[in-house]
Length: 360
Image (spheres, rainbow, N blue to C red):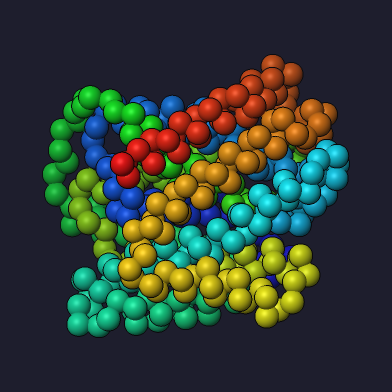
């Protein structure tokens, strides 16, 4: 097995840890409220079923069809579909979004560390130190960084449990349109869907499986559990800064490793590869534009999922993904196709409107 090849059982673990940490980043910087509001949790569960599950299947099916990473695969997939090369931008959007998301995660960690441990140190310096460590970690084989990330996440959950306070009562609040945007962000962007990370990590084992369900369903369940775990423990206590920051740095190193591999497969010059990674991460060191980047992070992630839904649902040939997915019954494929062609685009556009509505 190559250094970066991941065994099958690590993909769900990666999904749980990655979702948990990205949620920990997006919740505070985007104002997503995860408390014991029954109406919001039901809305989020609906988003997981009708949005995240079809996208998860979509990502793994494209991996099985292309047999290469997302950035490289779009060239092959557009040729197969006789589609415009402009659709290949989806791969670039995802590849550049990964280090941009890394910057947001490290920026949030620097803020936590600055408040709880190093109040006298300039936040930019703390961010720079974490970025250097993350880039260093990116050279560690991925299976090790996933395990280290899991150690940090489990540590944060245990600490939240042992130092937590009593849970508040469940309550039902008036449902607002803006909550759909938050639920969609948690279901899609916070789960890392559309970035090609699960796509990339599944390549080593997909050829050994006859159906994408064996890979997609465990990943989706892990994402589901991650949001539940974060929501439960976020109400009880603040997650330990040390454990969360350790997990975040390990996860960002893992993500940078994945992004670098995608850029390498496009045979870009090494200097260009590093320029893309460094600029996308270090731009977060500019404190004055942090609020703008926070909203850009959410909208960018939603747009990537929207492009993939339209491409797979309307541009690709029907036979291509049907064969890759290999559902046991044709009705399951038809339900998935309706979700991708109609429900996903409409729901994501509504979520984008809801997110933008918070600004005005």
